[in-house]
Length: 474
Ligand SMILES: Cc1cc2nc3c(=O)[nH]c(=O)nc-3n(C[C@H](O)[C@H](O)[C@H](O)COP(=O)(O)OP(=O)(O)OC[C@H]3O[C@@H](n4cnc5c(N)ncnc54)[C@H](O)[C@@H]3O)c2cc1C
Ligand code: SF4
Image (cartoon, rainbow, N blue to C red; front, side, top):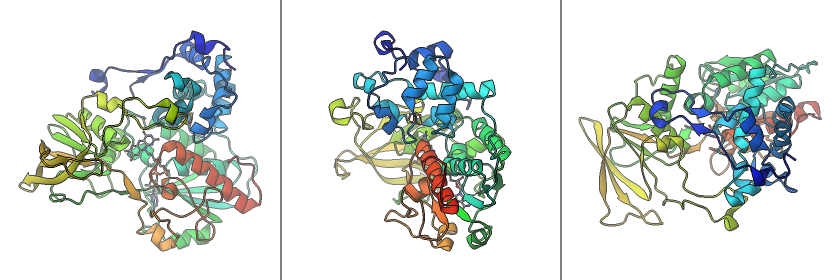
């Protein structure tokens, strides 16, 4: 283990942010790394518990105590090898994962969990700096061809795993660049896109071929791919947004978050918008209301603030959760509690238990959102009605399911009760022969770390299906 008495001697210390007044001037990442010595001290706090709950807390089952010990002993390259054995892209999770591992750390019983996510990020960032991360092309080719549809974290993880065991892997992506929501959803200030570009270059050197601007089911028939490939992996995400069908919904200025956020990411990346939705949606000089309290809502706040919004208000229909969880009831699970993101700190008003009644406007443009407070069953409470100025309303209420038109309908894969592609977490097999599914397309809207896990596990299942056995980990 790290240092036997480390957790007694060393206080928890985590990465800090650049001041909000500085960071809102641009879209760059603003987390300040801890530095080598401080990271080593933090790793020394790990108690190497007999039952390391963090293993199960982490969806990719990162072997956290092992790499904490290696960092404490200054064996960074070994730590990197260990980290990569369970996670293809620790620099993504080290930046955007909500770190359920830290919620399940034994030291979290005292509110001082090991700074696992920061240590993970430090290991992989050092790996890139030192040139330790290089392409790992397969020595022997299998002669099997696999198509992966969708280049989000699930598709990338699956493609990398499959290429490394010798398959010829082709990734089909509707957008102009790879990364899925890592590229077009998550803003640059949370994760700069050079991290994705670097991995794509590594994967290309490992033999993965990327086909951009190909919407499978529209530009190419899935049956054509079925004829060309030995297996197909569906990793197209859960892209159908939840709508708000109330009066005034069709007014100009009421927009889905995912019409707004990708535009800014494209601007930052110097990428032309070829989606046919090229009219700029901008928050500058506007009163912005964000409806929905999750990650997407937070990202709309940070982006609106950077664009120069006059005010940003975030509404959530759920009641305000407690500031602090009851550890005896929740640990080692992920607790429901009030979470304040870096974007909230940049200047948004938040209100909970709010229902939306209607939008009204002038000359076809939204001007006002009419709201009411709601009770525990989301019923309006009489006499609590209020109005908010709203020149731009961003709908960030989550995603219902994958898009069914095109790819899924044409393939005819069976859907589960929630409209996701049906496949279990052992075989990842859909109802159509040689078609597999993983990530948000299979499990519904989730997290980057779950997408990586499912991509890796689907790769294991595909390899076993094609070869009869596999050395890929699950
Ligand atoms: C705004 C926002 C912020 C988020 N922030 C976080 C966060 O901070 N931390 C976190 O862990 N998670 C976050 N998430 C969730 C996370 O991004 C997703 O769970 C994850 O990206 C899912 O990965 P995936 O590979 O399954 O799908 P996606 O990332 O959605 O990728 C799917 C890809 O498939 C492509 N595709 C779809 N259909 C086709 C087709 N027919 N042909 C070709 N290509 C196709 C799409 O263009 C897309 O590139 C966020 C989500 C959003 C929307
Ligand atoms: S991937 Fe997420 S849950 Fe796993 S160790 Fe990293 S931060 Fe923790």
